[in-house]
Length: 91
Image (tube, rainbow, N blue to C red; front, side):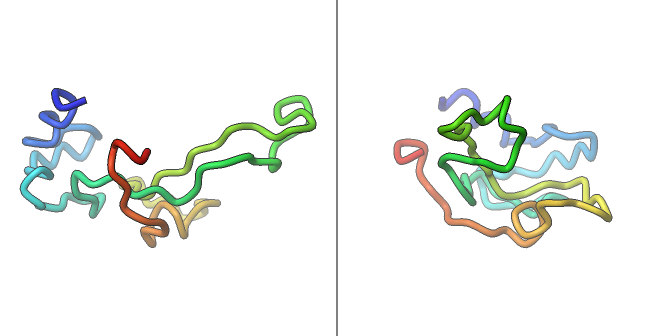
């Protein structure tokens, strides 16, 4: 996992190509650091029954998105940073 965090030294994970050092706390257009912000993890029943079955589907929502779509259905998660910072171990 640590080698993946090296990508945050000069962040180029999206088309904005900010090149900020998220490992040093710099924030790019997305406003996110190198911390993992978890909004929800659990069973989800919001899809068609064929997908969720009777027990729901396993769903993980992480916060932060740099697209800023005008009609985003998950605005609180993507733009308002809903959720809590969790360690990779807890995740």
